[in-house]
Length: 341
Image 1 (spheres, rainbow, N blue to C red):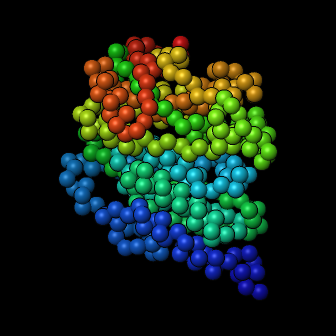
Image 2: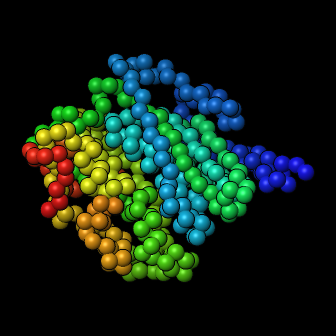
Image 3: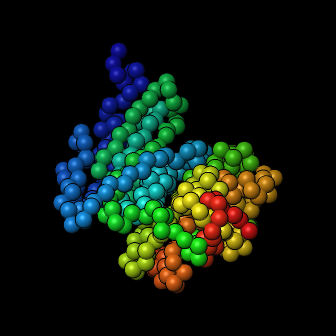
């Protein structure tokens, strides 16, 4: 009897590391010390000494049950982007610059090529936000997970000068809300998605004219990463007063998180076109509109609040980052919360 016969293939683990090295290397920043394979990742803090009060911001998350689509479609190169996005978008909401990322993959059986493909997606997400992939873990769990399944989670650390933290404390009536377009469902609400649509290869391969693609292609579209957009806004000289990453809980849970007491956010539903995937989901599932806005991003992955005088500069900065955006509402005096009209 040995470890391999017990279900854990150490050699497969070594091969996974070798296959993923080239993807990890592409994410390196000058601050990274050492290489892949150590017991920990080392990151120099010399550069942040230039800040008056450097403040670390962090985020951790996973991909949720969206990962089931990866299994069914046998497509594993984009869920890593989702994992990075869910972490670094939260950091960007605080005004932070993501510095480094670590991933954790738990699998029933280590298939080196599949693991490397997952990490390829993680590395792509890191490249999109400028973070270094400085470490990770692949854990083989025979008997705990099916051999052909895995779960993916991650952790990111960023930095911001304390004076540039986005807190919402200066938000006032008259400030404007700008929504940045999502790429679709992103990585939230898939437990409901899987109840509405039959999760079979045939169903996911079905082409819908309204989507312009198959259902599976629309659903597995990776989460947008908004780090560059927030940086462009800052570089344009605009102060983002408040910011909300629209994730699980949709509009009703996430928008109030960026508000101080005494003001409310008013969002106009007709200020932009809700993507077809949400309309199809609502129609097929017979889901009430309020539940849709309480579960999904409905086409807006990030909402920022800026002074009315900065709207044009903000929208130009977002466009320069390659993102679509819309003026979707404003801030008004009232009880803390969000109103959709």
